[in-house]
Length: 366
Ligand code: ZN
Ligand code: ZN
Image (cartoon, helix red, strand yellow):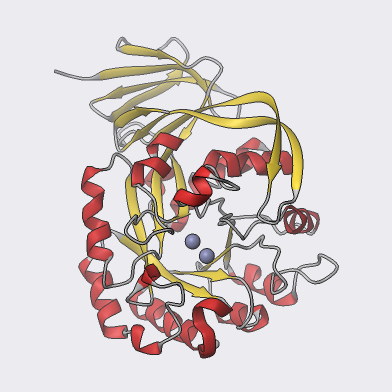
């Protein structure tokens, strides 16, 4: 039996209302409201629709407590169609993460931690013996439909006495595989001025709005020269909010100096989902509305731009013939106090709330 849906009257972020006809999980037509043939109608008046949200930085490997979570808890249940696990696993456990996709509705990809032990320990780059180039390259080839890039966490508590060395190895791996690298930044060492020059076009700096002393802006809130040079080279900036890596003060400095985000991601796992300050990707997106970014830009950061970085443009569009990857959401007016990773607060009066998601053709209500 054919399964037909018509999503009736949802608005795109450019303000146009459309009907979207979906048959057996595939988009059949996108038309003006009222022009679509019969099916099970879902009245979406008053809601928005975008291509399915993509969260480029999550932790979805529950075995590595506390930095893990169940896939669908941070995926479809929160309106997110696609998650990218950002380096929870290295070569040792990536097979287990890949296998866990079978039970999930959410589409999952992964960045491979350059350390084979991944987040089994939180100083995974402190012993160079864990950076096994041959094993790492073999692993990305073995999981080429799953691994979309590399992850290296370049902060003091992770690298300990190894300085910039793990990043040099990560760069080599990126070159050898043709896959981009996501770099976590935080407290020194290494110094941010030594990290940025090693990043190239398509590489991503996650936690770019962190408020730590080794961050991307000087004491007057102006972007470091190394940052403006990296952006000019095509290095991407990702939010990666997380427990400790988003500051409203830094975000306002970035906005003032025109250093915008490429992608908005959550760095979510069970603890910061349940207790904040992350809660959900939608909540993180709402903080950027509160900062004054337009809705279209905020939604592009979790759709078309994230899909482009993944080299999977089909995940960032709404087009007949594609599998349905869609997020339905509303903007709800209500007073809200947003909290950043440093305890800083800002008052807002509206929030993005997911209502439902099609992930790879299958629907889940939120
Ligand atoms: Zn991180
Ligand atoms: Zn993370």
